[in-house]
Image 1: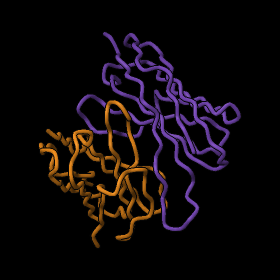
Image 2: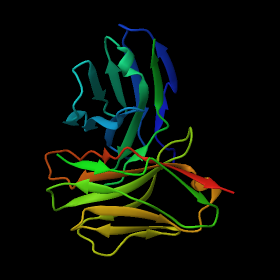
Image 3: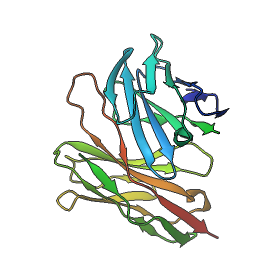
Length: 112
Length: 119
């Protein structure tokens, strides 16, 4: 069974731009969560989607948004990029009712 | 709010020896899960071991075992017979048990412990 995939793996943007990251969960997994990983703040929860609806949200500004499609694939968008948005963005999927989250390799975003 | 604390930013151990990584957490919840995740250098995060709070028996997975002390809110990871491939960042994580409403719950992570296994 294929694991969680994330595209692109690396991204370089400049301040003020926007970016869209994509995540494809493990087949059969319908819940997708996003996390931001930085050296200073560590791993922080962004949001969780299930059945195309955001179910849970972390403490991030409205510039961070996401969505989920009917095939459970998810995207997250960051608008008006700031230098502090440079991070590894991790996506994790889980089967409904399961407590284990399976992580993708991440997208490393660099904002210049 | 829940917090997870890992007090050891870095540790090292000789190959074949045993090492214990510490984790404490703070919560008022009674039903929750605890996890140890491993993130090798430039590789993706994988689950090492999990513990359900309602289970008194400590979880074990091959060379990995935990010491779960619910009253003390402590959840340490013991790695026996350390191998070079165990070199990684180790994250302790907490998750509230889902209460319905559509949310599976989110992981709350500690800052991590960087473990180096030396030959």
